Amino acid sequence: MTIVNSHNDWDPLEEIIIGVSDFWCVPSEEPGFKPPQRSGKRSDEHIDKAAIQMDNLERVLTSQCNVTVRRPEKIDFTQPAKTPFFSLAHQHGASCPRDTLLVIGNEIMETTMSRRARYFESMAYRKIMNDYFEKDKEMLWTMVPKPTMADDMYNVDFPWDINCQERKQWIRNYKYQINETEPLFDAAEVLRLGKDLIVQQSTTANKKGIEWLRRHVKSRGYRVHEIHFPDDLYPIHIDSTLAPLVPPTKERKGILVNCPERPIAKEDKERIFEGSNWEIIDAPPPNNMTVPDLCMSSAWLSMNMLLVGPDRAVVEETEIPTINFLESLGIKCIRVPYRDCYRFGGGLHCHTLDVRRRGECYNYFPNMDSNENHIADTRA
Image (cartoon, rainbow, N blue to C red; front, side, top):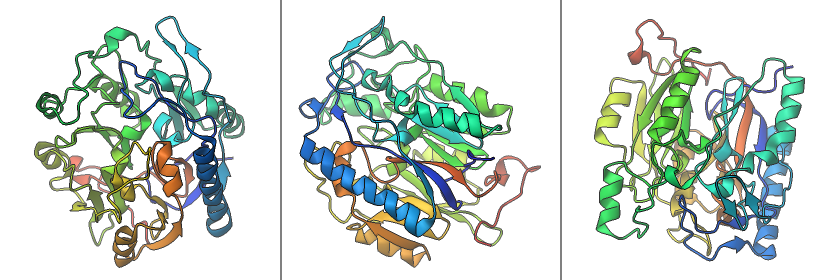
């Protein structure tokens, strides 16, 4: 029984994990994170509103898209946590399976995370992972080396003020609050394009973490490409900055949308995409540049959609510019209310993890290897 099989964001979706809002907390200040608002548990009102919209997403996916949905265990992350290297008054939550779990083909990785408050987050998915492991005899279950998250893993002099000139200089030099002491990367820094994995070096992924991933997947024929967005003052998680919409075929190039406020570094764009089968265009603007109160993400969650197939997407119902743009490309939009979930670490893509999509692993960058030039027509 094959359960785990996912190589990209557009093949027909068959099984998915959706997070939960229960017991969700804004982390306290720590070396890897400075909260922009009061830390502690989200209000019951906000938790309940988000739960209603997440539950509705589950109903939509099961009833309209015939997708199997799994949900994580509701662990009380308001509890304190302690390791030999740090202690916390409370933790974070399990709203974003995309952040902590990475699916590459038949493998699910529990990634390191980069903040102490998220150290034990993958435990919420442990029963699901164990169930997959027992039922799918081909599933690979990997845990990336667990970091200590000791003080020496962080640059304690990182300038947190988003408006200061020193911070801009740090970011443009690709230097962040995490250093290179140990491998670190959140799963949400990885964009999967078949045999090629695009990984953002950022506030939640260091070069050593990217190198660990490169060595780990190399024997299976994957290529890992480090990417940067130098104009971003808080680079974190690639899926609201660069996202695939249309896969390449033999007849046409694929389409990737890039947040126009966070363009790809020129040298990275040339190195990775020049001569490829991909066209990069600006994402349409958000419908509303004002995010809900207490939301710690940007308005560019408008890009944070969930493709359930190459011609169908689940999109937040108020994101009209995005909906119009997708429909102009022939992508039918399933509109769902989701703004109440924006207070919980992200949007539709962040709060889901596609475990099984019906498709195979293809090389969408034949320019990188002349001997591997098979391009799949996923719309055939």
